[in-house]
Image (cartoon, rainbow, N blue to C red):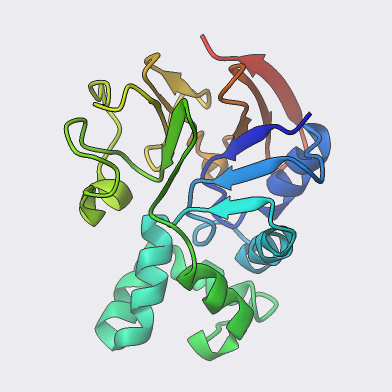
Length: 222
């Protein structure tokens, strides 16, 4: 049976990603929705993007755009934008393309730029919708402003007018567990800060987690 699975902010943590993919395990026919922030801060953004590109080629990945992809794409617009991105984790991303030495934007292959350019603002099913950061409850998904979708912190967000459950990332949960309000759940569990990477089955509430040490655990939303 095909599952829809959501994966929170990866932030260049390829060991956690590969461990998670194996431990769930994610099957070939599962539709994976990734919530953005694939790059920056963690040590191996290149390997993370390679996995995402390969998964997208199968048609079984819906990649959303996070604020770190926004900044990385804008870094091509000039030195000021690039400097701003480098200061929030971009140096780690570039280093992943150059075996740990100082890299440049030109080191990033075209397939990775193309992947990021094709990331989506949101996704939805009959019962849930998926965004990187947050959504205004009284606005339709199509009308949501970028600063909310990519940057707004997750607090006690009211239920959305659609009646669907929101699944988001962006706001690190210091408990290293998803934060669930019933009508909204955040699955950014701070993997790059000695936390865990989370994969959630939104239909059942079951979730799996893996970290950069190759450890895994499994639980249910509460």
